[in-house]
Length: 473
Image (tube, rainbow, N blue to C red; front, side, top):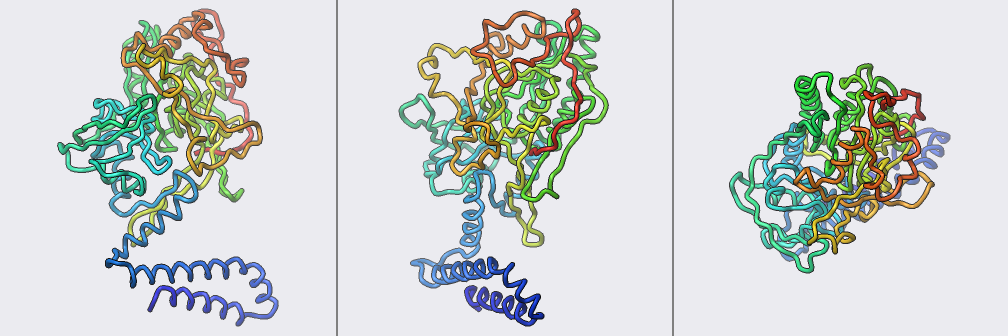
């Protein structure tokens, strides 16, 4: 039976079932179901087009690919983050969230028909080859990306370990596209790294939020306390260029520094779908002061952590405005058919009720990195475009100002030249950083917590107050 005829029969069966009911119920259902009849007519149209392509296209088409393309088109018309995962991509996604997968080591999204690098992952082939946040990938091994779905492009970038791939990149500030050759490798995400900075400060870098993040954070804090003992002055949590990841890991990381109170809340289309996540007693740092570093590459789960700690006045935020991705994507398996859909199902909100969708989080102290001489003339061009710049992005539901997100995502490899990191160290040592601030962040600067807790000054304790229940990712 032709698909168009099948759809017609289904719509007629539904209409017949409606007419066979009692008059009152039929009238009631007809009123409520008029929209469904319109949908059946549209599905009928889809069936006609599908049949015509199958029968008349110049070459015999792959019917499975036709259906997959139709599903992708439907989902991608919603927002940049909804998509279809075929069985293979679904398996790859599950592997990736466990923190180990094959590929180049970049987090990407789709923008204006090309692949945009949200952030290269530390110590991966892409990062070592010089791929930068904000790069636009226009070709993969000479094949144009335009016309491909995000999943198709990602699939082309994956391959056997040890095989080379050439991506053609368009970078702001560079006139012509250029090629970057990368050798594929197994990507093992060491999502948490740590060190001692300034002699008595624990520095913890979180590169992504996967199943290894919380255990890695706990180990980092334990190692720092073992090395420094009671001399720990405070902690720097570096979330710069962290593109996000698992919601439960963002909640857990936030909870690590909070004694109680809301961490994040999520709100979908229906009020019954709202959820609120609260911290459990126990601050693993013992209430030591915390500074969180963010920039234009800090997105999603990173913004949940930064927003929660900022709202509770548990941490001081230093850096530049974050990416602004404040939506929740739910992975919905498609049962025996295999595959899944990644569907935007809710917005998330910080404890104070802020929606950062297409707005981002503004630090308490806006401090930009000092660019090397060869990049200074291109400073404006190097600014990372955030969520607000993505075509078809979900709008911010708060009527409190225009959308704006994204900022510079440049971080120097030399820590001594890392202006934001050095500002955090000075801050935790109780030193003035006013000369390093580009401009005060009006939204939060007034209530910024004190720097230290060991020298007579008040420490940044969580206020633990009840917050307006709102949404999160």
